[in-house]
Image (cartoon, rainbow, N blue to C red; front, side, top):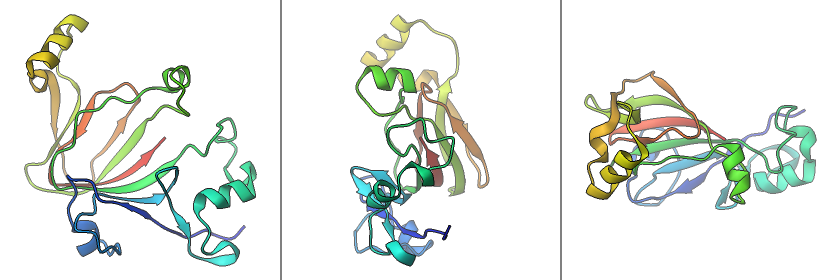
Length: 187
């Protein structure tokens, strides 16, 4: 089987910077390049095949044309190709998030849950992420903290360094801080 090379879908969210263009040679005229979806079958941005027989075809169309035989045996149980690979340039901090697991996602009418692996490509000296909580608490306390805008006080603030990696399992509260370039493999 021929190695498939892809051109990324590019996203220009408010919190993005220009490092992916200036330092990592991603091609874009956008003012901000927050993410490059290197391998994406997502409805909001598919990668494009840039070599071989399928050159010019979207990765989504390629997967549809080739079928599950090219997905790999661990992906065959999914309805849609379940992996996205991206680079993230968080010039500014991102929102606090919690992603569903597969069971919750299916019950809510979504395709799959979302577990992520983050590899810190580079970061500012004082960069950090939020990853989980720093102590046990009740649902009521957590809800109150959200309402009172004090939730950051109970999140686990983790300093990051180049080369660190984090498995952000579905159901884990998390957020990317400012000044971080991340390579992410996500479900």
